[in-house]
Length: 232
Image 1: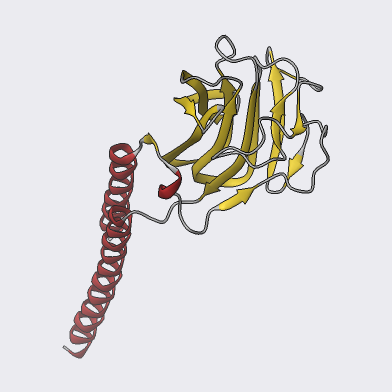
Image 2: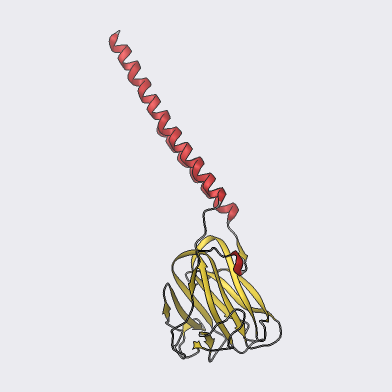
């Protein structure tokens, strides 16, 4: 009986491992692809000049790294480029060295993340910003997004969806092409379970129920057999 239980547990583990291996991916997405229950971080109510390094706007914590070290006085809350299609001040604005990386740490894992951005350019800029998923301080996946007039300053919306949850991202800009940037309207959300995963859970549940019923039937059979032997 123990061997049957082990076999079912091994099969369930293989099902989950196969699902994780086959479905793990990260894709760029636009604003319409975000779930309706996405969490929004804006910067309304914050005073212009507030340093972003060390800033906490629940449920997000921000730090700005230059050469891998948190650095203050380089990125602050400000009016930036004014209103664009994806920026509504106040926003995060580079006020000094734009070569750094903005780290956003979230309170819990998510599958969707995105932000509006603008850069100090009026023409299209290839690979204007890069969004990376982090595991600790290691970059797992990076996707770059180009900027186009939005409508005056170049910008856009950078978003991604990952089948594997994450709780930290890094945002950087192409400082060799643009001397300054702005970030606003941060969105993130947890994914609804995929139909494939729901099917796997149903299969796993059916296997477990079948094992329990099999054990009950076997136990009842042994009791009946024992009673027959006593009667004889």
